Length: 88
Image (cartoon, rainbow, N blue to C red; front, side, top):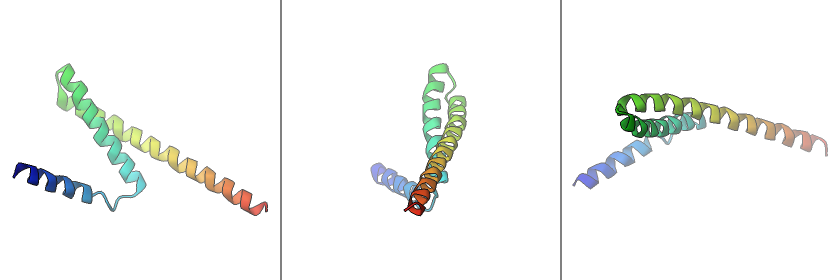
């Protein structure tokens, strides 16, 4: 019974992420990952809650920086592709 409820809850959470754009997905991934790692490190230090909050903040920033890098990469690729096509 508990496994069924857990599976339904996980499916509901995952289904809620389907309409997100790339920026939102990367920010969420960074935030959740950072919160998880921060909670573990915070638990070692004696305050898991504070560690999770700090990790979530750091993960959010990391996810947004990664998103910016990927967007710049895609933009540079498109510019090079367009320049190559127009040169033919």
